[in-house]
Image 1 (tube, rainbow, N blue to C red):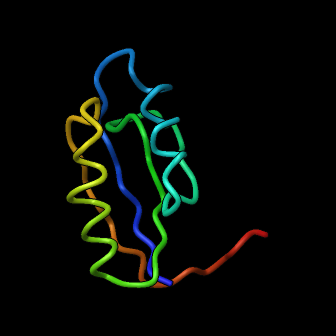
Image 2 (image 1 turned 90 degrees about the vertical axis):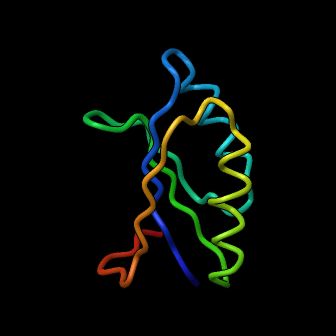
Image 3 (image 1 turned 45 degrees about the horizontal axis):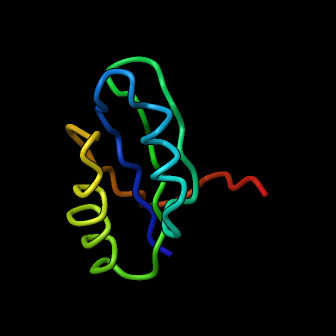
Length: 82
């Protein structure tokens, strides 16, 4: 499986609603509100790179409260919690 971490800037006051929209997506396996330079981090998992490209460039861009993203591709997991 392919995983990516998407760091997001969100419109002021819209973090909880945006997080709920993200959490409703099948490919989003977790969503975190965070401190620092970003507002939300979503972990996306899918089987193919083409699908990941669709999620990031189409589904995430459809959420109008997300103002900017930075996508990090995960190469390897060193610890997996179950």
